[in-house]
Amino acid sequence: MKQLEKTLRKIDGYLLSIERNVVEGWYELTVGIPANWAYKSNDTIECETINETEKGDLVKIIPKDKDVVIDDLIEFVNIIIDTNKKIADLQKKLEDELKQRKMDMEEFTAKFLEDIENIKESSFEEMTKKHKEVGKLKEKKTPEPKEEKTPELKQEKKDEALELLEGKLNR
Image 1 (cartoon, rainbow, N blue to C red):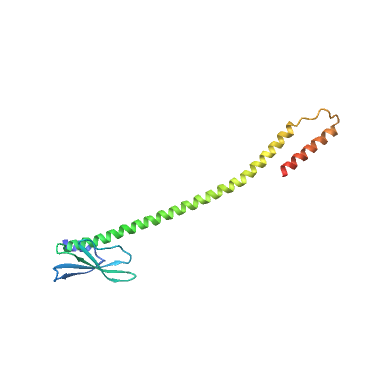
Image 2: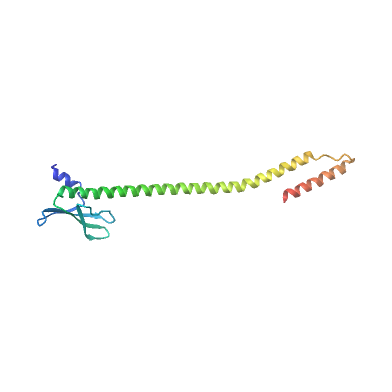
């Protein structure tokens, strides 16, 4: 493959025409680029938008002085292409990152809400367990009065104590 063909192949699909401006003595390129692509003039090359559509723009790449040659214009078009491909890659990376963070945040939120529900449930269960344990301890530690002499009287006192304890637990 010859050098000019190799150079032009890099901008294939974008290059519409190469024109010679005989008045100024330089070449001008007309390229088609997708809509929303970034491009702008610099100190040595002018980007003149010829036509804008929803699908893309026709842009004329024109030297600002005679020292700018066709190689510079082709390189400038390559810069436009490469820059916008990098931008597209970064946008894709950002979208992927945001999607991943959204999924992470949803998982975090679900776990957080689950933890809250577990705390609600276990807190009240723990309180019930504590009250039951305290009731058993009181039941065991309650000394029997020594003045009672009949077994029926002792059972009556135990029943009253259990009723009192159950009443406190049910509150």
